[in-house]
Length: 208
Image (cartoon, rainbow, N blue to C red):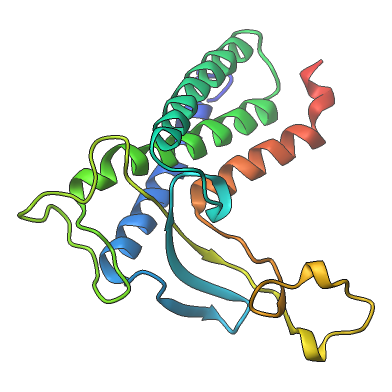
């Protein structure tokens, strides 16, 4: 099927990632207060709701014009990568490579949707209130200034400094005095980008 319709594979990948990413984000945004935790599997897989200006894995980026620059940069990157991906399809490149680029495009576009529209359709999430969708007074931010929703947290290793082995260097411990691996909080879109890039590194020889 994909050999006869090579464009179908990246379209399915992009739509599937976007659907899962946005459903989870909508659910988190309308059911969680900012900073709220819900354990999924013990203490190593937690849903923790945070928001950020659009950097991957919950990292912060300088605000104001920096936020707009990041949104525009992401849109330009998605367009360029998408064009390149379809050129690879015409050249009958390996489906593995096509899927890699589709994952990257889907992930970047998923976070673009947050930045572009979440500020318009949601009220502000706070530590004491859950956001409402389509609030009467309007959203919490103008177009392209919305916050990206993150929720996937995997603190697989969590060690307090006073009980840690002596060979662990001090710089590995955060301000809370704990060594946590993996500390960043991310979303499905971030994961798609990371997986796409990782697979490109692994299968880069197929690009030849």
